[in-house]
View 1 (tube, rainbow, N blue to C red):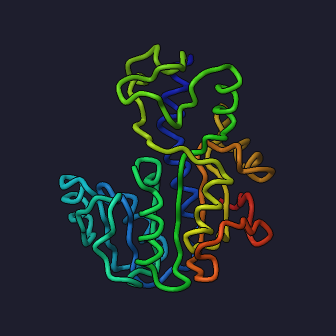
View 2: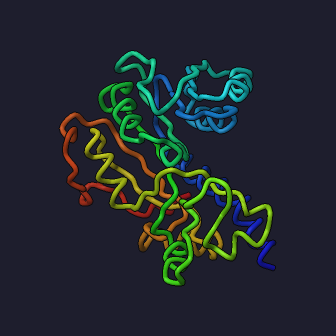
Amino acid sequence: MINKQKQWISHNVVRITQDRLLTLNRSSTGKLLDIGCGNGNFTKEFSDRVGIREIWGIDIDNESLSQASSNGLRCIMADLNNPLPIPPGSFNVVLCNQVLEHLHDPDCLLAEINKAMALNGQLFLTIPNICALHERIFILLGWQPTSIWPSLRATFGNPLWHKEPAYSRPSKHLNAFSPRSIKEMLNYYGFQIVEFTGGLVPPFGNKLSKFINRLNPNFAYHLIIKAIKNKEFIGKSKVTEDKINWGRTDY
């Protein structure tokens, strides 16, 4: 039973996050850049939703970029921990889906994304949430939260994960984000958050997760954010919660 539940969560949590991310992308034009585009499958789905035709992707893996190119992306190979080889103000829309947590220097990437975007450009961002409901329970039990691990070789510290080989491999996340920390970071690097919601809330299903997100998205497995480039926010870390559209559920 536990094995089946974990397989369901593993398969559905990412797809549900992607579906909810798509609902935030309602009126985008111009050029799209996908940071960490992988094979480009979701990039294409994301761009098709609003009719963006000029699609770029950046990744460090050459094999993934080859597949992305066959999906119609214009591809750039680069290490996301370093400055991006992109002229300032080049893109109107930037997608950054499950990337920041894998980087040695997420600050560098957020600064580079801001530089690459046109003024009032839109950023769509998702990250794992170390304050998710299941993570809070694990911490109360004295177990390791699953959004970040102390080892790159095995999932030490969480008996639900290391009992089975399929879940004994760490996620290789190098950073962990709380709702508050990602809001402050985005503000500091020149982004104004306009919509903030969450994905699945394990161990609950999709419908109940929507209800929980309506009350408080801080319990979700993934945080899903839409922000715009706003030069007035650069160098500030004030969280402007009064301007954020919380807990969207119209998906």
